[in-house]
Image (cartoon, rainbow, N blue to C red; front, side):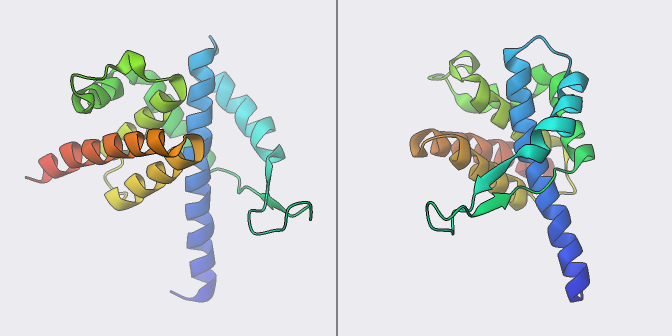
Length: 171
C-alpha cells in the first residue's frame, strides 16, 4: 500500500472511530428523551458534530491549540444507532448474560448501557471487523467517558461478550 492509500485508510478508520463515539452519544440522548432515532441522527449529523473541537492534549494550556474531531462516517453511525434502537432487548440480553448475579442491567447508567449495547452490536453483527479493533476502541471509549474503575468494569464486560460471542461461534 502506498502513502496515499495509507492516508485514505487512516482517514476512513478515524471516521469509523468518530462514528462509534457519536453513536454512544446519540444513544445516550435517545435514552433521556422521547425522540425518534432518525430525528436524533439528523440533528446530530447536521449540527452537533461539526461544531465540536477539543483542546489538543499535546498543546500547552492556554496556547489555544485545538483539535478538530473527524466527521463520523454517517452510514456507520446510522447503522449502530438504528440497529441498537431497533434491537435493544437483544443487546441487553447479551449484556445480561455477562453481568452475573451481583449486577442487573437496571444498575447500569444510561451512558454505560449505550456504550455496552453499541459494543454488543458490533461484536455480534460486524463479523468483518477484527474483534481486537472492536474491543480496543470500546475500551478506549469507556476510558473517555468513565473513571478508571468504571472503565475497567465496562472493558471486562466487553471482553467477556467478545469471548462468549466470537469464540463460541468459531468452535
